[in-house]
Image (cartoon, rainbow, N blue to C red; front, side, top):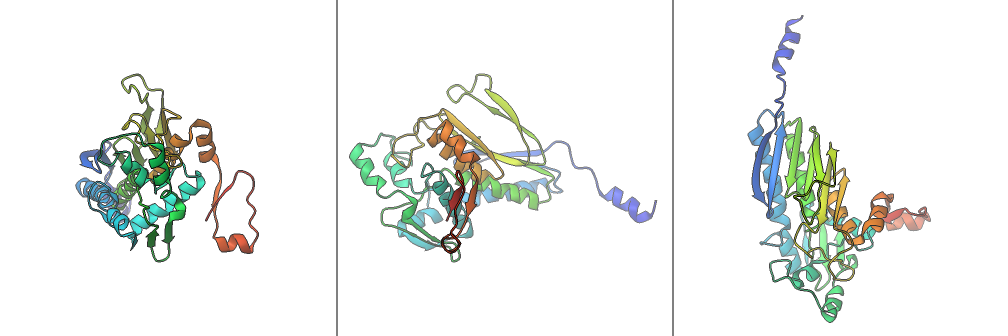
Length: 305
């Protein structure tokens, strides 16, 4: 065997079979990160938690952040992180017919789910607040990342920011040379690569019961929305009322951000419309293309602007 070949074999030590694990409190939730096969697991874990913290610092509504600054000012040139989340949030809002909507903040705040006392909104109050809710009130220029909100409209990324944070943390583990990684943010947003993970779907009313089902997650992400979280905290942005059509919704997707937003939309829509949403083909086309080329989508295909 040539010397260089022997050297190559000796230099490639096999990765450890057991992942290195760390748990911290981030984004108001218990965050667990596992890393497998990284040369420096401590640095990889630190980078993953830094990514989670970065999203919290930019998109939290529970402390001063880039998002609270935008909501207060009504316009700003935002970071690439916030622009990416907003753009995807608008896509899911369009595709779901408003079942998921990032402008739900006025309803959520009035209902006491942002630090106040939870309460049910009256009809007149809901009607007044619903006038501020809807994607038509958000004006985003993706090229410049300029965002303008109509008066009274505010953004809430509570149904999508955790998923984006999981995606960033997984990217940080990959960049650190990990062969595998897992990020679990509060049990509601989870992503993994290079290490199969068994996931259980449990009764949200009594998680101590045997799971309803188990499945293997590999090189994918999932998010769950449902009654095992704060009761009544997921509002239907179209009505301002608590969503109550299903007990829980779990969605598996290529990215945790996509799964996060879709699980909220499915929870609001209910079983049959929710399944239709996640199985519907989606294409994106500029208004100019659609007009110039007489774009005619087939039945069941959603076109996003």
